[in-house]
Image (cartoon, rainbow over all chains, first blue to last red; front, side, top):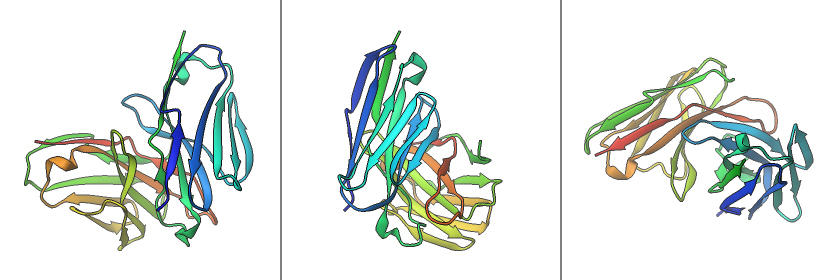
Amino acid sequence: KNEVEQSPQNLTAQEGEFITINCSYSVGISALHWLQQHPGGGIVSLFMLSSGKKKHGRLIATINIQEKHSSLHITASHPRDSAVYICAVRPAYSGGGADGLTFGKGTHLIIQP
Amino acid sequence: DAGITQSPRHKVTETGTPVTLRCHQTENHRYMYWYRQDPGHGLRLIHYSYGVKDTDKGEVSDGYSVSRSKTEDFLLTLESATSSQTSVYFCAIRSPAGGDAEQFFGPGTRLTVL
């Protein structure tokens, strides 16, 4: 069974700090997704990656396929970054890719001013 | 934003009653998904669809059924709601692009079963 583990579960930091959220998974994957969910809000896709590194604004996502590990970094964190960050993977055995994603439990991030 | 809506957004019902949640998309995407989100579990797949009348079970499908008679609509039915089905339900869509592709999520439906 595919497991997706995120760490830390909760993170409180001061505005301006560099943030790292980690994700580990147990099976081969075709892609890994990072998602953001604000309190009471919907779920927004931040990144989808299958190798290397992607950057969007202050957000950076990296993945190491051999080690089955991904990190999400936030530079110059801001209170508006406060949200739940969710890692999700699509297992490589899903064939045509119609199967849904397998999700981690999320990391609750609070950035204090 | 992807054109995906869910209705109702909030619902309170009693144990044993049938409930239908609707997901509607305007993107003409082939793949649609129903997930539930519960504290301590994260999101879990209930059912998915890969085309009109083509559906399959996910990880937590017991007590749920789905139907897709049109590309744009994917319905989730709880035949006889139970308190364990109190949850937030998210619909998602995915484009048919080759290889993997982003999933876009609806705003969610908060269901309470008393």
